[in-house]
Every structure is written in structure tokens, then in C-alpha cells.
Length: 486
Ligand code: NAD
Image 1 (cartoon, protein in one colour):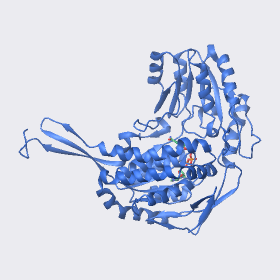
Image 2 (cartoon, helix red, strand yellow; image 1 turned 120 degrees about the vertical axis):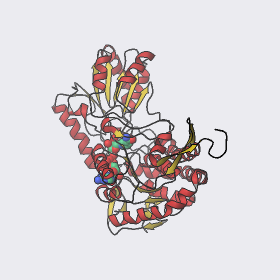
Image 3 (cartoon, protein in one colour; image 1 turned 90 degrees about the vertical axis):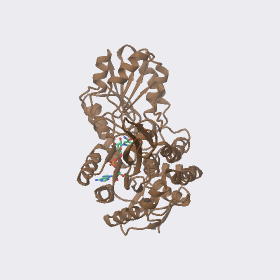
Image 4 (cartoon, protein in one colour; image 1 turned 180 degrees about the vertical axis):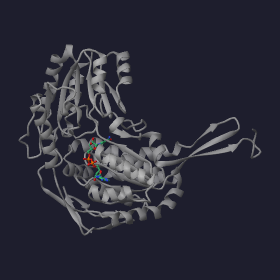
């Protein structure tokens, strides 16, 4: 078994299959986006490794399913406690691995990861219910579906993986996780924590590896009963095809190009602070409101406030407490972001600030605001996944709704206004899975989450997660057939 020392933390770089570490002969190199330093050589899973993991999950399934929600909940709560107990290690490894802000990981992501497990363990206890019919009583049961394949992206791996692991396990499934190859390490720690918490061997399996190899083999495997994927729309399409081939339900949470609408009557100071937040984690956030749409009458005044708020977004090493904008994940992704900006500028956009690399290191890009942007430009249509915002103005609600809905995405929308009826009207008209009014990034685990259009298919969160990860069964019992009063 290979162990890497990452920020003083021992992390296995191998798979976790059937309760033991398994190595692949082929490995891939992992470098930190912070400074390009070598972090580890990680096992690159093959179709055989995937088959072994699915087999282990299949064998562990009957006993895990039989435990029922009551039997699983104490184990899952211990799992959540284990995540909390290793918060600092998890945060340190995640930051080195994907360049996300250390303080954000300590205070938000790791606590959220623990809550993802605990919340769904508790929610599973209250799912069963009855529907009283004229002739029968319908007993609605949430049966475990079987083996679930979970595939996640690099921008928040711990948080996004537990968002699937929690409900999948609470629903009684066994799972095979394929972590992102650009940030796979906290998922490996997750396996250790689950094991230490007493989650039985084979219930949670991790196969490391490259998406096109290990990921593709996993979603194509015939003995998988559910596929839950978070990542890019291009991969999402391949996942959909794989699910269709085996007639397996698929949930895909994909990219975004979300509008950030600021009405003239809004709290402009609060809105400006929130616009600047879109640069956090170098804009590598699916939900980011990257298209700022401002009511023309306040455009100038609001721009001055945003300029001030953006100036406070310190670029640098994400381990430093004062940093707000860290590195982009890889050199390739850096070039991709730079390419988007260069093409936008060549197409007539104007950089009000930023627009180029930042001196903090090879993969750092300046927080950027592009004006003179037309709705049909590439920069207004495609997800950049970097610290790049666009600025457009509108004159009335009709125009802003047209602009807001003018992309192929529909993940989220942000609206700032003090006019409640207007907020409700706009919220009803924008195409988005989540609309935040006078706030941003608040995600209640009981609420539905997902995207419209190319931002996704399906909803997770609360009971929606269990609708996906369960075989919902109705047991209709004729009234009076057991001698009780009809
Ligand atoms: P990606 O699609 O390249 O990769 C996501 C995962 O899929 C990785 O684990 C990868 O190894 C795997 N994968 C790649 N090819 C595969 C294949 N052929 N078969 C099976 N698995 C495969 O996405 P990414 O670059 O890691 O993540 C960035 C994207 O994720 C952005 O578009 C972002 O908006 C999106 N995202 C969405 C949400 C959401 O909740 N909607 C959250 C975070 C990120």
C-alpha cells in the first residue's frame, strides 16, 4: 500500500475495495495547484479494479440493506463524527489538493461534509408514510436500490462527494466512489474514516483513476443500479448515454452560467459584497453568479461599489488566512480561462479590471470584470470556471429576464432588490434550479437542488435524494382485510 505525506497528513493513494487497500500497477502524478509541488502518485484504476469494487459492493449490499434506517443511522452518525474529528487534516489536504481556501474548508466545507452524512441518516428515519385511499391504505416504502456509482468533480470533492455518499448509504445502498483525478485525496481519507466508524467492508468503496478509464468503466458496469454524477455537461452527456444503455436512473448536476440581477432599489452595498464573493476559490464554483446584470440607472454607482469590494479579494496562497482568490486547478485549466478572456477582448469586450495572470504564481489569474459584452458573445454564453465576471445593464424586467434566460444553462440565479413582489415575479420567470433573493450560496439540505436545461437532470436534497437513491414501493392493503375497521 502506498502512503503519501500531504501537509503532514498520511493519505493512502490506493483504492479502497471490500475493506482493504488495493493498488494499481499504473499510477498518475498529482501536483498541487498552489505551487506545482509534487503531492503523490495515485493508483489509476482499471476496468478490473472497478469490477472488483462493484462486486464487493454487491456482496455487502444485502446485510447493509437489512439493517434498515434505524440500524444504519448510528453508524453513519459515527462516520459524521469521524469527519469532524479530522477536520483540520481534511481541510489541509483538500487545500493542497485543489487550491481551495483553507479557512473555507475548515469552517464550511468539512462541517458541511459531516452534516451531509448525519442529516440524511436522520432524514431516512422519517420517510415512510401512508396515503389513505377509499379502498386501500397505501404504505409508501423507500427500499434500497442496490449498488450506486458516485462520480464527483475536483472543485469541492469532499463536500460534493459526501452530498451523494450520505443519502446513498442512508437509503441502504452500497457504493463505489470515483473521485476526481485532479483532487482525489480527501475521498481516500473518507474511506479510512468510514472504516474506523464501523461501516462494514464493501459498503463504501473508492476506485481512484482517470475519468475516461475508471469513471467510464464504472458508469458502464452492468451491476450498477444508480449513477449520481456531478461535473461538466460534456461528461454529463456520456453519463446519460451509459445510464440509458443499462436502463439505470441517472442524476446529473452540471455546470452553470448564472445571472446575478441587481435592481435599482437593491441594497447596493450588500449586493456589491456578494458580487465580489463570486471570485472566491478563483471562481471555480458551479453556482457562481458570473453574469452581473445591473439596472441601467444605478450601473455607475454600483460599479464603484463592486470595484471597491473586488479590490479586497486578495489573490495568493489559499493557506494564508487573508487570501480570497487562490489558484486555478491545473496549467491546462489556466490556459482555458485565459483563452476565454483573450477571445472576449478580441471580440470587443473591455476589461474594467483584471484580464491577465496574477504574479502570485503560474496558475493564478486576476479577478476580472468584462464590460461591453453582448449576450451572444462566447464569454456571455459559456461557463469559464475562473475568476471572470461579465457586466451588462438592463432597463426593465422583460429585458433582464431575456438576458438571464439567454444561455443553455439553468443552475442558479441571484436577485437583489427591496421590492418583494418584483423579487417573486423575477424568481418565477428565471430558469434556474435555485434562486437566491438578497443572499447567495445558502443551501438547506432539506431543500431541492439541481439544474434546469444543460445544468442537470434531477433534484437531490431532502426527500428528493431518497426518491433517486431508493426504489420507492407502494404496498396497497385493502381496508378491513385484516379484520380492522374499514
Ligand atoms: P468533469 O466532467 O471533467 O469530471 C467530473 C468527474 O467525472 C471526474 O471524477 C472525472 O474523472 C469523471 N469523468 C470524466 N470523464 C468521464 C467519463 N467518460 N465517464 C465517467 N466519468 C468521467 O468535470 P470537472 O472538470 O471535474 O468539474 C467541473 C465541472 O463540474 C464544471 O462544469 C462545474 O460547473 C461542474 N460542477 C457542477 C456542480 C453542481 O452541483 N451542479 C458542482 C460542482 C461542479
